[in-house]
Each structure stands twice: as structure tokens, then as C-alpha cells.
Image 1 (cartoon, rainbow, N blue to C red):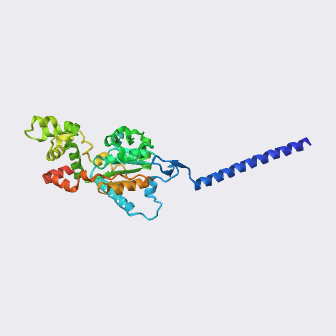
Image 2: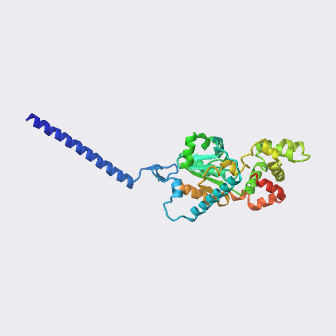
Image 3: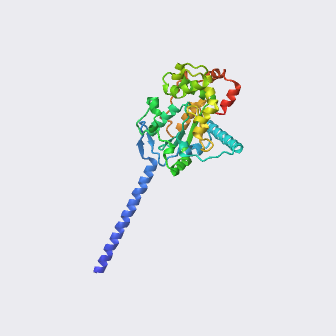
Length: 334
């Protein structure tokens, strides 16, 4: 009798365990399907509810495997640009025997956005101030909401953005493989004129006048006055060009980043850039990138102040007194 009672109690305990297990599994199944229908939401810093990044498509996936099967005209355009860069790099690698491995120091211009899996290589005088502002909004975790509220000088403080050279080698390789990488380019001579106008014709850029202006006047101007040698604030464009193509300049020190080549800053033949934006189509290309990053509905690239822009007409005017020989030499450097 006692043995039978123990057997009944054991069976009841097993039944309860099975019932609890089944009930728990059923609750988990219900929770799973509810989460599929109503994803966990988080409040983003811009005041718009978006699904958390985990589990959603990355910009790289959205670019190469778009949700819409038919490619847009913009996607096709950027594919053509990628192909053009690849073909140019392949042609140069055949004609040149020079090869080198990139060092972390080569990656100091590549800004990283962990939250949206983006890497942006900034090129001075190609809207880099506004793009740095946008990157500060994206990485600021709610500290910033409007890019244009960020002062220009704050956008250029290095500690406000994290660059790829701050990571370990395995971390660098992972991000280069997994994140969407982009840069913006500009017609080289136009970019050069923009740099000259900004750094040598604006009275507030005294640091450039002292460091570069005085040196340029000393080397390139005959019978320079003591005032010009001391201040360096009246550099002529012809003198600036002569300074750039002077072999002594090349041997002395690397070019300043404002007139250093895109190739030297971003290494497009060593790093595969997924998107190459153009200054001429700045807003369209920028907003396409923000759309791929999943933030296009609430973050737009700032509209540029066109009144101060260096135009192609202005560039032509500046170069009218530069000889064709010097232009050819200059083209090799910019």
C-alpha cells in the first residue's frame, strides 16, 4: 500500500514538472511571436522611435543586397563609380611597382560610427566640416540633434570623433570588412583654389600665414618687404602654386592636409570604398548615405551656403595666369 502511494506521488510530481515545462515553453513561444509582430522599440536621440540596430540590416547589407530587388538609378551610379576607382587602381598598380602596407597612422582620417556601422574618410575642402557635424550627431548618443548647431571649430576637435587608427589591428580589419565606407571627392584644382581662398585670403587664419605664408613669400617672391616676410598674409595664388610644385617643398615635409591628395589621405587603392560621393552632387549623395544608414527619415545633410562656395568659374579665373607647364606639374601633386 505504501509502495503504491509513493508511486502515485512520483507520477504526480512528474506530471506537474511536465505541465510547468509545457506552460513555460508556450509562454516563450507567445512572447517570441509577439516580439516579431511588435519589435522592442527604443527612443533614439532625435525623438523618433526606431527599431534597435541589433537584428536590423546594416548599411552594407542595404547597399549590396537592397530590400527592393530593382536597383535605383542612384545605386547604379555608385556602382559605376566603384568600378571606375577599381579600374584606375588596377591600371596604376600595373604601371607602378611601389607597394606598401598601410599603418595605423594612415587611418587617422577615417572616422568611425559604431552605432550605424559607418566609416567616413574626411577630405578637407570637400564639405568635411558638415560631414563631421553629421557624424557627431550620429555618434553623440543624443548630445546633438541638429548638425548646424555644432560650431565649426568644435567639429574639428579630434576628441569629438573616433578614428580608425585608435583601434587594434584585428578591430581595424573587422570594421574595414563589415562597415560601410565612404568618402567625398572634388575637382582637384577647384579644391586647391578653395584651400587657398580659405587659408591665405582670410585675415583670421594667422596660424597659416605664419607657418606657410611667410615661407612661401620668402622662397617665391623677389624683393619681398620685411612686413610681408614677417606677416605672410598676402600670398598670391601664383606664389602658392610655385610653392607646391617646388621640389624643395616635397623634400621638406608632407603637404598640409588641406592640399594633400585624396589618394594620400584616404588610400582608395588600398581600402575598398563602398560609396564615393562627389562635391558636385553633395546633398544627393549625402542623403543617400544617410538613407542607407537608416536615419534618412529624421536626419538630412545640411544645405550648403552657396554664396561663399568656390565655383568652377572662379577656379578658371584663378588659373588664367598659371602656365600650362605649371598646371601639368601641379596636377601630379594634387
